[in-house]
Amino acid sequence: MIMADNHSHVRRFHGKRPFEIDDEAVINFLDIRKGMSVLDVGGADGYYSLKIAARGATVTLLDAHDYNFSELNKAGIRTIIKDFCNFHEGNYDIVFMAHVYHDLVHLCKINVLDNLSKITGKYIANLDFTKEDFGFGPPIGERLEKGEVVEHMKTIGFRLKKDVDIPYHYLQLFERE
Image (cartoon, rainbow, N blue to C red; front, top):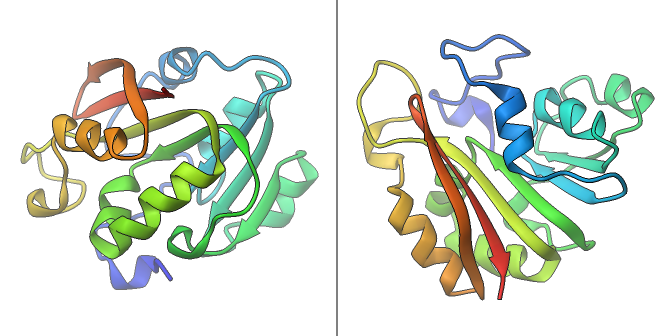
């Protein structure tokens, strides 16, 4: 299981972060439409899940820990306690990962790519830290360059549809070929 306790750089921000991201721009970038199904991998306290659900999507949040899942369930978000290295159930229009893909690659790259291929209907979205040292986030050696992620996704039949650089991060949207 992916355990925050085993990864000192993993912090659950619970709505507060040491960096600023225009979250509405992130959600707009995803082109969420009413009725889409979205899996938020490693979604923790549901920060992005709630924003995505507000756009009319059906959201499932997957995390190895229960971060107030009962509250998220009350808000209409389905929650699953499981690590993604062993998750390959369901079919989602979009699989969204915020600040988790780099960890998953280091823990179980082959399983992650196989699982993404099995459960993703159309899009994979990845929001992650750039490979710069700016005083927070995962260790530089664990971060991935944008091009590395593009190559990973190509191996499972996804092409880069669009990407954008935002402070300290990059955001990518991949489409099934």
